[in-house]
Length: 132
Image (cartoon, rainbow, N blue to C red; front, side):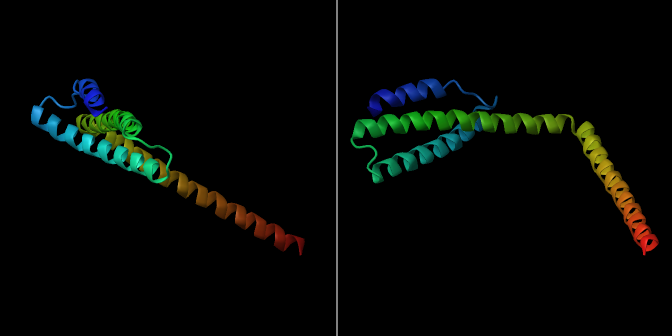
């Protein structure tokens, strides 16, 4: 079964490119492939341990299916992280201004909230004193 599924896996995942630099691309694809292999290996091992599956062919089919799904998911997650990093690096001034504005706005809202809360507490204390 491995001789059938491995070439299919390599054919599907062989077209994935994350970097223009071939060395970086091989490195990241190796890391993603190792993660996918480890996850698939553990999942199939647990299925065998719990007697959910038996036989070499069913284990191989499940292993390669899980491995392909995990590989594609990790590839797109890494791709998103790289895109986000590039986006932040390119637009770092705008993002810095936005983050600083959000922090200043949060500080102003907190100060206003505390002032209003203090005024409400004084009004409640004044009302209690007047009622006695």
